[in-house]
View 1 (cartoon, rainbow, N blue to C red):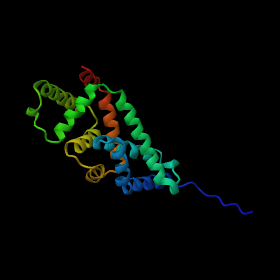
View 2 (view 1 turned 180 degrees about the vertical axis):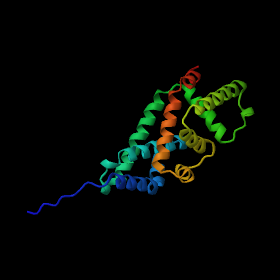
View 3 (view 1 turned 135 degrees about the vertical axis):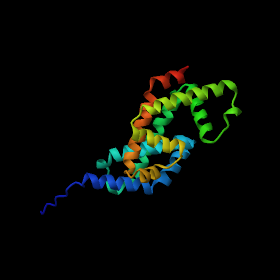
Length: 188
């Protein structure tokens, strides 16, 4: 019997294929995550984590099952976010409400005085924490949060691969979550 030796796909090719699949399936997976999480910001966070995880695991995907594989990763990320949210204290929800108010253009004067003070304190602490991040991570977070650019737009604008932008975002967010000053402020 003749033996056919199939060489494994080139890792760079696998990664590019996964990145392309992420771009082409972004709408479908995003809708799926939005339906699961019922929150646009949480769905965006889950999508970001999904793409990072997919790119990190690109060598393990069978190209014929890439769509299902990507949805499975998204499902796992959404479940992790739901588990994490069920354990978070109410102060974190307040900080998320404050951040959403800032992005939506809510006038700070519409909030009660104590919430205005909390919001300002959070803003100052967040800016200080952002300044401690490496420039690339800080710039991605700034463009994503304050300029509301998509990850694809940021990647094109910064002239780096999508996976790199997502990695910088994820690492930056992890560092912000680990910042003791922000943690203390959210716990108070």
